[in-house]
Image (tube, rainbow, N blue to C red):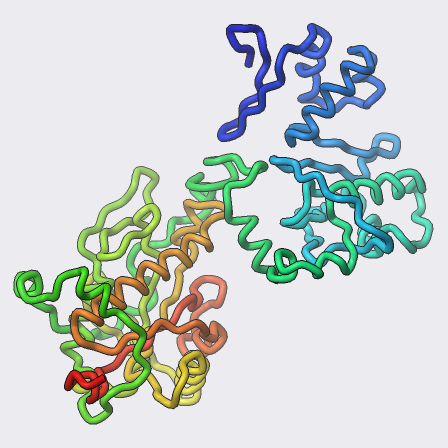
Length: 443
């Protein structure tokens, strides 16, 4: 695009780069860069100094993909990211950064790192060997010129994909595990993301897969109706929000002689997780309204109470059906239930075991059908707001709440028989009756 003053700007929402005033030759060069051209062809269309200046601006802005070819066969390409991170030249010996991953994408291989300024795409799988050895020691590759391997080594270094042991010498780098930094980088709006195209609410799965239904399709057996609280009474009798927030704390001990009741569990789930309204969005995804907020109103989270000691309810694993406010008993072996409880309770200090362990699972497809790149980060945010809602409801009710930091998704899959990839546990919350000392106001 050209401004009224004649300056040129490149725009691809949400990115905008002002290029300033370009010569007629440079503007012409911009027009042909959308198709494959050799470096020689480009400089023929524009004076070399002007072409190099323009190409440097495009590269630093992440607009330019460079491909190395052998004859008519592409070997690899490098795509800068925006904003471009100019890496410091690493000291010898160079090796792959610990943040680098090499993954397959169709018939190609992608070399990427959340700490890099570019990604490298390999079209010839044999080039994976010199990448993994940081182009230091490798055998000759038939039909691949040594100059191409040398260029590959340069691209890896320039992109910041190579490093030394010194990358762990500062807390800012050592504090990140590779999977946590990759998750953070991949789920935030980056320079190479295009909102609504490969990031955000793109509805990429529409037309390819049916939208997962709002109601859980698995648990349809006879249900246990849960008691419903009187909301009008709660509005009058509940403590003030400020009082509840100031009193909120994690409690890890219980009164086993006076445990949680089924009425209290019913009220707790009604306050925090029930469905208040249903509908569908413009693209056909079932949506609903619940007490806690959720992106796109998709509400992918499911609550599974693992009951150990609740008056009026048999011990076992249940699924909470939020549309009807009822419980479905899930047939599971005692061994699987012990594994599930033990794995989560390991995150609690002390000797207490939750009277009810609320396992929170995600039917991830409910989000992934609509959202790209940010879906898993979104489901973890939903776990956080559900945790807070559970803390506030438990505090207002005079119960003992505690969000747990660990859980075993394999144990959940074993107990429920669910497909790990279709629905998996992402959070655990312990609940029980207040210990006697706190109930009497001496704690």
